[in-house]
Length: 277
Image (tube, rainbow, N blue to C red; front, side):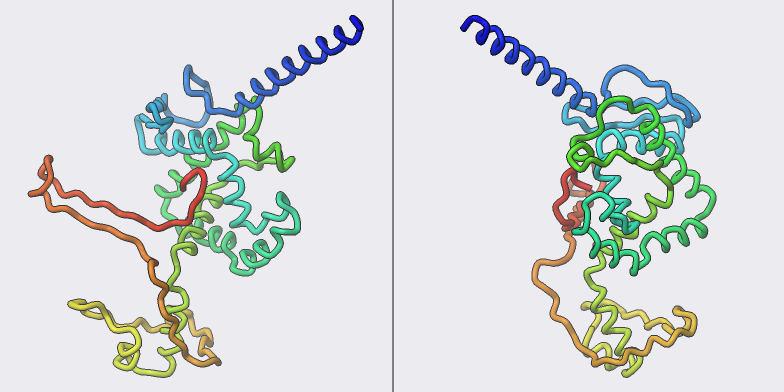
């Protein structure tokens, strides 16, 4: 009996030690919020201060360094979200989640989101490229110095092969956000169909301009699409807009504010994400 008690006591102590070690290991995935780090890639010292809600505030000597700091704190706080976002845009979701991601991968590869991001990179001006590169350098600086546990999602999916961040990854997600906010794409297709069949006055009967708005003339779509044959072969149809879609914004005149300056508020009705985008 005493021997059994000793074994149980030892097992209990060992379990407590394992739990404490596991807790400490998982805690190492949290952002470092005190002290200093020496990393390469920035031009000057960057100061990151987090308020009592954990929101980082970046102080840098240049815009380039500010973007570097932003990439670093994003990787600290949102590494799993960033990894999944770029995999969605790349059409590589199934590599992590398995066959359930194949449909999404096929669709987004067909749509060519990541390929279009590469095309966009070529056309950017040098100043914009510098900022994208600085952000990517900040993300990669975090990855290079990260020695603790990865966020729990990586552990649960047994995914630890995190590739360096690229400016193309950032551009690709801006295109995904553009797609997410393009709820009117059916309407645009309708207008394209009508453009081949009706004059502008007839199109206005289906899609009249807002009150007090002067409608801009429709562009030459043949010129925009470089002579491609886009003439639709199916019937024109008009889809009723669902209730509740659309962003909200309002502005208050400076005569009604304490500072004397106008206030503008905007509410984009994005889908629920955790953490918020």
